[in-house]
Length: 497
Image 1 (cartoon, rainbow, N blue to C red):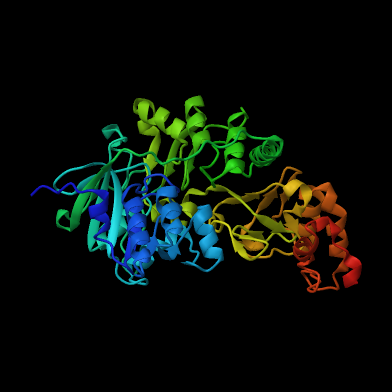
Image 2 (spheres, helix red, strand yellow):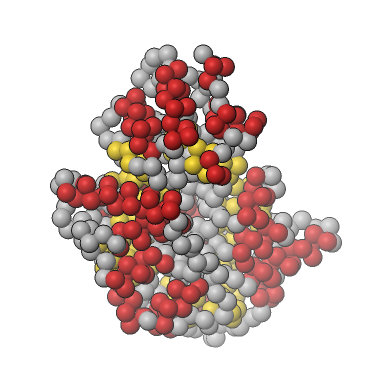
């Protein structure tokens, strides 16, 4: 029996108030686009009639404006996890108009299978192709698609006709057994294929196929500026020093990189250094810079959960599948971010901090300790388990009103135990084999902007002893001063002497 084609509005009628809904995709790519817009319209109508209508959303990572944006504007989200990057949704989360709990990306699929969040009512999955047997060629991002397809009572498929059938074979669909029955996950190099090129779904569960040809809408990253170029150069210099010192093998190690302009600049920098050999990537997201590295022959292969390319780069990659097809493998998030594999492969991990403190602790998620930005994403999956863990950030933001290096982080996502190196536009702090005071001295001397260097030396001198010499009543003075005057540079330590 053929699976019926239905409209986005008909698909939305299968989703009820209070439903748990899972979405395919990861960091925008491969996420649904039209059913959620229809669902937002439905929510607005329900609200106008005085009815409650909110759903609980489970995704691989962030989505796109068609999902988080549209549903947030319609006030149709009750709960959201594990990661988001929508300005509209962020406003809801910080105003407590929607519940949000942050979670390491590698953990969600297993928690869903264990029933931690209750039953999954609906899964919405983007496809490049589907047959009547329920065999799906997924889109450009996988996320938690294999798990939600298995668990959901109903499945809605968005057939995206903008995606060519030539992407068949890019995917590696694999579901590990759950503990206590799990065996080793047999990935021993980035290019190892362990699963199926298609996602197999019980066709009896598929309530309909909705056609679309919408793009993911990923914007091009800004060109590297002076600050991000300096960060990129410093990361490259650090890796070169590790290579020359023999702490990295001459063949190098696979690399993981986070998302954003800084990460893009770092990867761009790696492509400019001849002494750094060809390398593979085992990561959660590949961006435009990775495609450029592949074209240069610098990046041989990338295992990922998502091709998060700008629309222009996506068009180029999809039009040149003959070149890219044997260089990219798209996996589920619990495999791309799997700690076992990260530790086995010995990844060089590169992630971005919102702020760091002088003892090496990292805040990845909260602005001034209170306002959620995006979430922890996969940074913890990689940081805690990588061979070499690097965090980078600009030394200052808002023209110097904020120092991104502070006495104590206002929110802790990664402790100093997981951070090998901190790198800013000012320089490199190698934190390995250093006690807390030595770490502080290294960070202040090498990573702090000149406007804040003496302030942080003076804070360190305030300490009255202990292995980590914090002055607790002054530890968050940078943050309280910014709240009071709008400029962290106005901090006056004499108040705490």
